[in-house]
Image 1: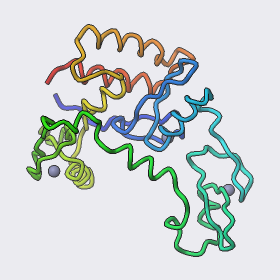
Image 2: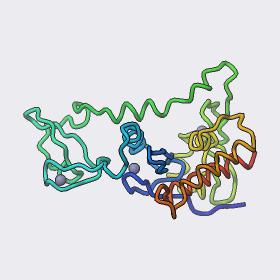
Image 3: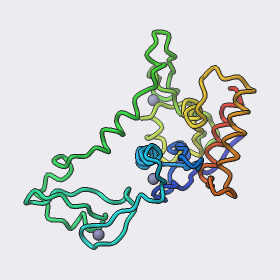
Length: 232
Ligand SMILES: [Zn+2]
Ligand SMILES: [Zn+2]
Ligand SMILES: [Zn+2]
């Protein structure tokens, strides 16, 4: 079965359209399920811990004084050492000393790096190894199941997947199972019954007709369930 067209959905945080694979759901204290891109996920989790909501993540640009989503704003260090918060257009015009990002304290980057580390289960000696069908490298991270435009199914490491996307031969990328489990919050040995219960619970809250849900969250939860339900 060939699925043509990459699945892309909107991030509930910044509104960017990203590949479904990139999104994850975060449950807010009021039960709201939001779908977040990797940039927004740490913010959403922080907001969830503080009991806030994702909608509050707006801040003022020190340059044009406009209100922007926090994800769009960035700290810029000026020549005299002052740190200002700028929207994308003000950031490019700010008079910095040239060495742009390297000098700025960027906490976001460190969280992003920590996030990509494999889950603790991969630290066992019996960790699962995969082989990329393109470069034949052994990888410990679950490969991406990619459907190519000529309807082949490949299991690619992150590098080969990126290369394939650059070449424009990718028709669809399936959500990885490790990702699907993260989204639903289930263990690898979850039973079919448990999985269904978890899904029913989450899909109710994620439904776009509910205040707690959104179209992206709904799609994400559904996709994650479908991926884990079909055992292949
Ligand atoms: Zn986002
Ligand atoms: Zn601005
Ligand atoms: Zn590869």
